[in-house]
Structure formats: C-alpha cells, structure tokens
Image 1 (cartoon, protein in one colour):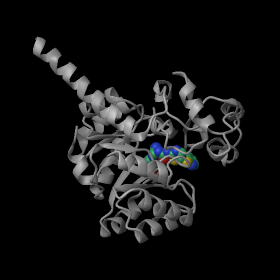
Image 2 (image 1 turned 135 degrees about the vertical axis):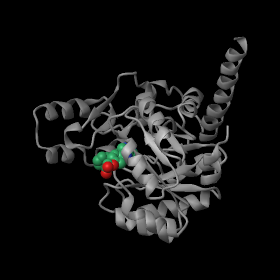
Image 3 (image 1 turned 45 degrees about the vertical axis):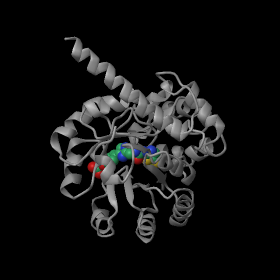
Length: 315
Ligand SMILES: O=C(O)COc1ccc(-c2c[nH]c(CNC(=O)Nc3ncc(Sc4ccccn4)s3)n2)cc1
C-alpha cells in the first residue's frame, strides 16, 4: 500500500497524523513517524520557542522524517516559520489560511510544503505556487473546517491538479484509507484516530470523550465568525451555540473560544473546554499504539482490496 507520496515525503506508508493544536506533540509525532507514517508537530497558537522545544525533542525520539503544522491564524506564525527554517524541518503542513507568502523561502531550504485546502480553487492556486502536495480536508474533520465533504471534494480536486492529494476528514480505518485512494487520493491524514493512541499526551478525559462519542456528537460552533470549528457536544458547546443564536458579536464569540482547547487537553475539563474531534469519533472505540493503528489501517485496506477484487472475478 505504497504510493508516490511515500517517495515525496520519505515515509513507508502514505498516512499522515493531523497537526492538531495542543494534541500533536513531539511524542505523538515521533511515534507515528517511527511506525512508518508521517508524524506532525502542531504549532497551533504557540510561540516560536515552544515549537522549537518540540522539534528538538522529536529529533531525540525519532530519526525518521517528521513535519510541523503551521496554523496560519496564529499570532506567532512569523517566528514559527523562522524556527522551521532554522531547524530545516523536512515537511511543513499549514492550516487555516493561504501559505502563499511562505512558499518561496521554504522551497529554498528544500522543505516539502503540504497545505490544507478546503476548496478546488485554493488547491489549484497552491499547485501553481509550487507546493508538493495538498491535504484536501472535508468538513467531517475536527477543529477548524471548510464546508465541503471529503467524499465530494477529494475527487473534484484530484480531477483538477497533478500533485498528490491527501484526503482528510472522516478517515479512521482501512476502509476509509482505501476509499480515499479510490477517490483519487495518494494518501490520508488522520487526526481523531490518533487522539486515541497510547502515545498521545492529551488528558485521559479527552480520550474518554472521543471513545464515548456518538454519530451526531461532533457539532460545529463559531460559524458566525467565519472560522467554523468542529467539536464534541458538551456544556461549553450548548452555552456557546445559545449565545451565537443571541447573535453576540463575532469578536465576542472568538473571545469565548480562547483557551478552551487547552483546558480540555491539559486540565481534562471536557465539560467547559473545547473538545476538538471529527465526525469519525463515533467509530474510534479503542486506545491503541500508533504502530497498531497504522498497521491495522494498512492490513485492513489490503484485505478490503482483495474482497473487492474477488467481486470483480465473480462477474
Ligand atoms: O485564504 C483562503 O482562501 C482560505 O484558506 C483556507 C481556509 C481554511 C483552511 C482550513 C480548513 N481546515 C484547515 C486545517 N485544519 C485546521 O487548521 N484545524 C484547526 N483546528 C483548530 C485550529 S486553532 C483555531 C481555529 C480557528 C480559529 C482560531 N484558532 S486550526 N485549514 C485552509 C485554508
């Protein structure tokens, strides 16, 4: 189950771990990379020196390729990009914006650039600017999302660009992996599945919340701010959505969300915090090591492919 993406990103399997703010630490990224995927450290809204500390830690935990996700809404984006250059990070993924202004400098140091795109137009613009691949993330994903689904957006982007498409949003097992390849992707990104891994350092309450999630629990908040975010239903989302209905200003709504992810991830307050996770949370039923997760996705995809091929032979 290798694709052209493996050579471009220097990985054994075309499986990328999502650069989830506060969740994607050096420990998680190193475990995914050591298991043959591409581990990603999340910069989130953290300052440069915090990201630098995670990069240094990751280099001690793995000799495999890993990346850094730069969240483009972060107030520290410029200093994080400086750190990425200083440490010649091999792969940079970006989210929540257009990384156009950073592409030239990253290419100069040979860093592979893989932006998340929520639309065909942005995917085409990124290819023209010379990025190495795009992560096409559907609205099924956790955290900051676009409006289109993975199932609709992936084939449309794959029709329009030549560089590899990586499917993200709603993928947590071999069936989703194989479906993504069938839609034209050359790899997948998984976030929610890796939250429930033994190496993920989020509070156990956060992992429990994902394990207990039902199909309709991953709701969208803050649509009115233009930065919709998918989180698991709890007291915070109920109060938040009520306030949004009373149309408090977008600035007040943004203010409501500040720091809420940290209290869920670090303090384990999953009632008053923001538990970011995708719609596939309801299918994640067990905490496993990153190696078990990756091996199971690859083996299940191979088994599923054999079953589908047998159907063809029956005709
Ligand atoms: O400039 C344009 O054309 C718009 O470009 C884009 C618009 C959206 C995206 C996008 C959607 N999803 C992603 C990748 N995923 C994410 O970035 N997920 C995130 N989760 C929590 C985050 S922290 C946050 C979130 C919102 C507001 C403040 N802070 S970022 N990128 C990428 C590019």
